[in-house]
Amino acid sequence: MYPFRFGVQLKHANCVDDWLGVVSKLERLGFGTVTLPDHIDDSFAPLSSLGYLAAKTSLKIGTMVVSNDLRNPLLLAREAATLALLSKGRFELGIGAGWQESDYSQLGITMDSPKVRVDRLEESLELITTSLLQSRFSFSGSYYEVSEFQLYPSITPDLLPKILVGGGGPRVLSLAARFADIVSINPSLRLGEYAKETLDEMSEASYQQKSTLVQAKLDEFGRKAELHCRSAFVYVGDDHHKVVKEVATQLGVDVKEAYRMPPVLVGTVESIVEQLEMRRERFGFSYWSIHEDDVDSFAPVVAALRGH
Picture: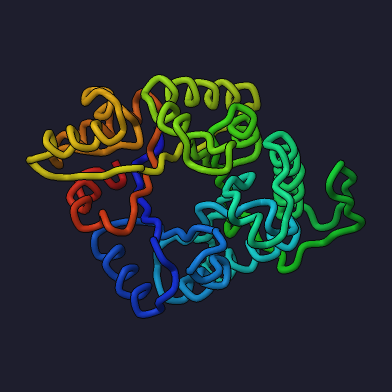
């Protein structure tokens, strides 16, 4: 098993002073990673923002996750290599097929079917991973044609960025097992927005099915990968029963079912520690991300588990 580690997704990357205060707190509280999202909204662009943060913190930095359709994969590989050098090997490139319809409409980009988006992601992952490891190469696919590409800056193996692939469908998770150092298991967002099926895919049974698929694919490819889960809801406190009942009512699920949802972390410090240990044993999750608003309440859990 991989040891536990914990990251935080910044909610709005649009204030430098706030960044510095948050990353200083995360270092002090024992969190290991800070990540930025990639959407066309009221936040700064993630890659240039992470270049700034690389010089301001000793934390690992990463994207959670870059939308593949918004960037040329070889330009993204170049950005990743540059960030890996600037951070001295602390950069993690999180990438997904793209799912949020508003990102596409605002940029005037056609949002293709899930199959086409995943097909394109597969070619992108092959290009990115190949460019990071080879000095010069060519490639011919359905979406990209590359002739004699050489990545600059080149980087030594000890500085290579970790590749995280996030998704919820079986095809994306299979690609993650094939290419990624970190597999992030999520509810599927194939419809381009949160929907009823998103809630269904947060169930214990759904995560069990997905983690089993990932492990089978890792065995098939003869690979190992760290498994990641991003929390959907966190509450740490003695009055957690009341809180979960309210959440379960809002979600339209049974209270016991809400407690068992892997991305839901609710309870006392001691009970959440037990939940995480069980979920690592059952699903393989050792890397957990929480939201910025939950940092203070979740810090005792991090102190109890990080590195174990």
